[in-house]
Length: 322
Image 1 (cartoon, rainbow, N blue to C red):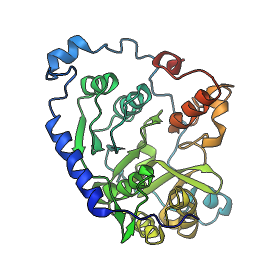
Image 2: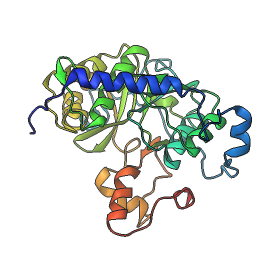
Image 3: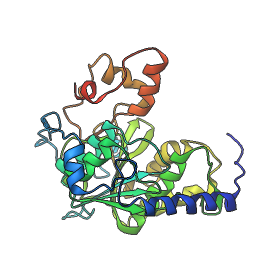
């Protein structure tokens, strides 16, 4: 386990203020060097996605709301023992988190579009300290009327512990919990795609998918702001020590196992395939992702690096569609 990193908090705060200033000053969203981005210039200068047939919701009529009871230990171990409410309790709000300035890729557009077209979110909140400035981001602003940019500073500490500045994903994990505790909703990583309406999962106070039998993955999480499990999950960060995935993956699962009455888990339908099985999805193409999935976490950033290091295919808009 790596030692807890030393962070110059004052210096990091100065950086955050600089970023905030830049974000606020770029609200006009310049496409050219000195040309303010307006609705007209977006419509004329940004190429549109004409064929959207590759992005559709698959029929999940067989999906049911599972009310697992203690009479079935096997089912309880798979799904947890949290009973669904009689009505949907998770707000139909999608949350995306985007820290640091980097390129908004085509797969990120598809992720946000899936929340709009498939999940049919009432609001799509894009929490960021650096609004993207790319062709695909402008596509998102054109195509998604419910998309809102929400400025949010990247967390530097949590419960008195300093977060590793070299691991922005740790900051995003913390921000995810804090955002869900503030307003509830559906958190989606920017490379997670919604494949089917999420209504059956919105009856639970907390729903999450398994990446492996003993791993949870918070790439897709549904929660109410009053979820007891969500607060217990947050308290795990009292023991944060700089480990990249210890809390959101391993300890997350252990907590669910110990408090199975507070969580609903999906063994295969939310976060599959696991990050070390991408070959089945991208190369062999024998992963049956179109059936029995609410959502899929494609880990495309990891696999893009893997393919580049081996001289393989680069992921472009056209070959991602295929």
